[in-house]
Image (cartoon, rainbow, N blue to C red; front, side, top):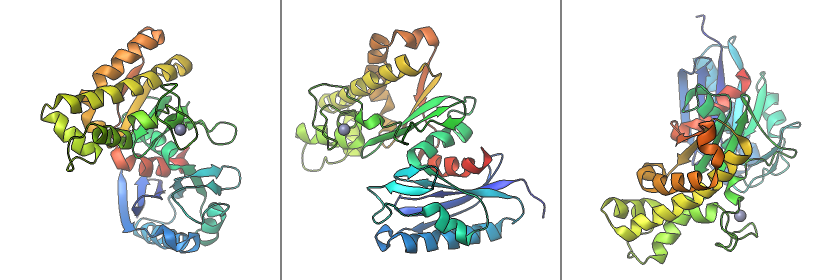
Length: 305
Ligand SMILES: [Zn+2]
């Protein structure tokens, strides 16, 4: 059977190891998701990746495969394909992920940081489809994201560009594990929303960001205040990014996205107040579209670049 060129994307680091064959027009041909046991170490995980990719490749067609892209939650030496550091993948530091996989699969293997891959995925098949330049902010346990310039990830000199979670938004704000005070992720991540909820003493049943959101939706004014505070921190960070980058599009994704209507007003208020370039340049701040699939699409996009 003749078919369109396709690639295989691998999303590493979540609770599931996810693999999908996606053709060049963005259609998912085949996808597999299996529970991942990262504690088993890199050799075992590499074996799993190789066997799933082989399986997915057999379901598609061998000749049209352009390569395999892998989103990795960590810092990657882009030249050598070695994972330099990862909090989520124990034992992967210094491990030559790309070469080990390439040994078993006779196709090109491209690694990318998972947050950067998500930004690429949104550009390819999500909210950034008509754009070549965008920034994606993903709100989760922390805040990560990626910068895409002219259709490609901007890595910075050592691959550490896009650490949005550690932008200072309040000089004397909450302490952060990185050693700084007032980092964006200490004021606007899902973790921060949950922590503010606990400080509000809503009760023992209110523990997560989703719990605080549910309370806000019921009209609880103090729960609404939590999202106003979170939107304010996000707006300050975005204003700085808009003033510095002059990109046409800034996307927000992650678990707190359903609370958009609660945090967006204070977010836009701060942006208008602090970024004179916002209105002047017609920059857009919008919801991302792909959710947890953004990284998978972005990984699959890598071989098409
Ligand atoms: Zn920090």
